[in-house]
Image (cartoon, rainbow, N blue to C red; front, side, top):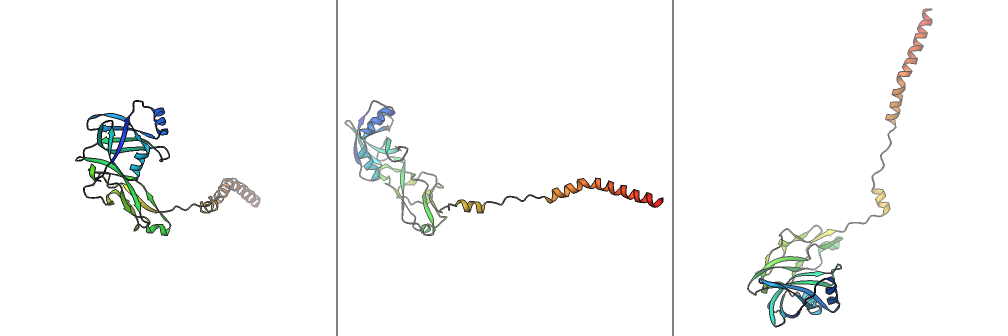
Length: 234
């Protein structure tokens, strides 16, 4: 990344959600500048220029505040709840010779083989953190998925990095996977696959009832036998 974009920033004195909302309506983005043991400075950036820089993968900027110009990297970008509009930016002062850690966007390229068999490609990590010189920060990390079958996955360790760039994220971090789409069952299918209600076993109950009646029945039988024996003796 040899070229850097120049952005002009204005210092801002007022903070707070209400003031930030007014800034965004006026086409500005609230930002904070820090680093190199200097005091943090609250600034306002031109929204159009900054968003254009992001879309082109720019991470190293020349930022001019008043008469002073510094090289800075985009350390963090906060979006609204829809993930669409930028609401705040963190910029860090850097030197072109120093090594920094920075998050780089992940871009999926190609059509996975598994999609022809009903699978879908799922992106689990939209950014990967790398470590490199500020002049070597890649615009994006491309993951080619054309050879992925259902059940295949790509972890951070599998992503090819440019020369001079080292992985800072966990090597085991899941980035992309290809999985089968879960089938949505109809109400009839759910009922058909539901386990049948257990049968009510009545035999044991009937047997138990017979068992409880048996002592009385035996007494009656003994009485009849005694009567017959008495008649025979007479």
